[in-house]
Length: 497
Image (cartoon, rainbow, N blue to C red):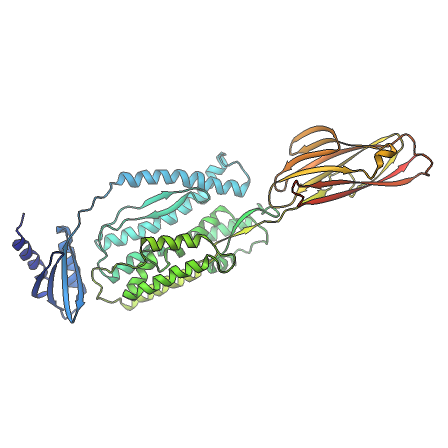
């Protein structure tokens, strides 16, 4: 092990190979070398110095203070990095969740098939899991490849499992070396979003094409949440005009997610990809840009009404992790015009892919409707002879946005006093039919589900002194237990002798 004096001299020798050193300052935290700026600038010599010192477990930085150019050298902390076994374990777990909680879930929602059916698992994997996994994985590999190009150590992607409807929280790589300069900061930061963005566009177009060709229509008054399109998604939709009521194909949803993830990563806050880009473009002023982005997220929690509460959580996480972006090792060299243009392109992509309110609730209305059954008159206007019975059949449909408990009873208008007997004799929901003999039915209907009701009416043997034919009416009354929904069906009967 070298003595302190020998270590200082060894480091000075390395620094002197790249800079003209005219002074050394020794502090408990670092060695500071006063250097002269080469005529061609500090970028190339500093990068050579970094590549020579980092393998020896030293980290250099370069600053300008009080008119002097200073190179600071610190010992590199010993990192304890997990092996690839952790990456593989998270990858396998995420494959399971993105297939079952992502693909199968979305395909079942789209097609109406059971979630665990072979169709939902297979088609869901092909049309949702695989495209989304490709977008997220290529995004992170874009960072990884460019980091390697700059000799910056980075981990392989860590994929994160999650719950429906995506099955994953995305992925990230761990940067295990400081970023050398602004050029590398921008290139590494922007590479992931650009790669993911490039893949998300054809995925979205293919998904919109399948949505247009699909016969899967959105159920009337469907319940749940609908995605809001970004500027770019709306533009891409122009190539495949969609009906006013349609079911978005899972492949199109995967493309939408890919574009949305691109926008989130490009937010110029903290150490997000957009934070890297902003720090490279604006230097120390990125701090103010980052705060502006966080405050904007908080504002979007409530505006435009009703806002999106998820932005508050995301903004709070950025605050916890840090709004200020650390500087690169060389913060002196400015970006060249080409990279400034790339930064402007990144800002433009953020604008066209960001969605202020990504999800909006739909189908909050409730409703019931009496409907006709083929082969039976509707509205009901029938003829019944004395001492005979007739069968009346009709349906009650849940046309609202949520399942409903329903009570159906009879309002006989005193017909029972004249000898009429009116009873429900059967109830059919789906393929299940139950016999009945009652004047009140209680059952539950799912959204767009119909109950078919059989009603038997028996007329009295005599009609008293009144002349025939005569017209009588009664009502079938349907309501929910809370009384919020009430529907009446008027039955009109012509009584003959």
